[in-house]
Image 1 (tube, rainbow over the protein chains, first blue to last red):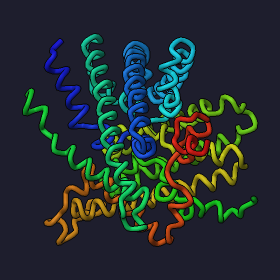
Image 2: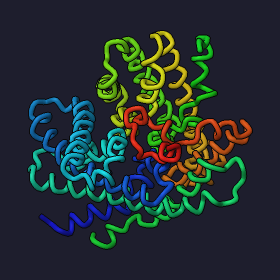
Image 3: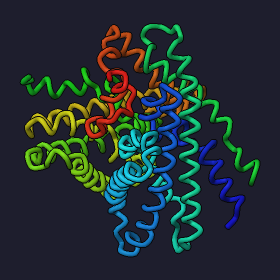
Length: 206
Length: 228
């Protein structure tokens, strides 16, 4: 396993192809839960956790169950159901055995089921790493690293934006721009700054 | 609260436009509106799924028990999304490449689950169908407006047709990620101005905009925390 390739995957997922700011996935929590820093961080940690876990479950399902039986078309249905069941299961397990973690992450878990970033990372992992005749092991590790990187990118965007928002909400902007519009405009500026990372991976590790 | 059929139909297009007023389904809205033709394709796909799922859920509303309703809705929606994926792959392969990941992601589009939860499980089949058409057309029109602005200024074309002066002086950032956020923000600001602030006051984005709000009942959302 090439360490350099894995670092490249994570860096690309966090900075270059940031899920929120460059690919528009997970916009709802990005705009909805980013008002306070602690909530933004809690939500993001839960997202990282679920992304890695969901990839760890859906990737083998696609590889060992759907592909050999020519049932690739069931991907959407199977993945969304698996993610929904998984999130429920995680919540129950956390509640029973690790109440402290449940108290801090549990509240965000139900919201994550319908988070498009989680389903998005599962599907894009299958699309980008599960190539013809590729071995399961290495591609699975790559998919897991991509999931973790995407989650970290989500965390980075959420935490940065929570800081931006606490100031933007107090700003004296025109009446029509108050609330959502000014939030979106500041998201656009944050997104511009992430465009500066384009080409980073190729130049550093290429 | 009996509303006329026409009111239900136009509700989604103007008064409760899903994207510009309710702010639901933002992810595909921002992502695929780089070209006007993509907007039409995505809007049509969402409308189709919304119509089918609203009708089915409205038919089954007395059969599905309240506790398992969300998983049931998800299965119904996912089936129709799979159907749309197959149709698009078979007959519109250019659209399939353009929409890519966002086509299967219609499953988690807040508008569809939101309408199932807010409208279809309380209303009859005809009303639900009209609501779905209204919401779908409203979404498609909003996408078309946004995509037209981004394509005309960003690429200097409209539906692929070159526009004389703008094609040589395009502002390419409009078709990239930041342009999406900025144009969306400006559109909402214009609507707020035109409706004299009624649009913001009625629905600030937050918990009620989230489809899982009904299912979650948790304190995770700040709106509920503030209320409590």
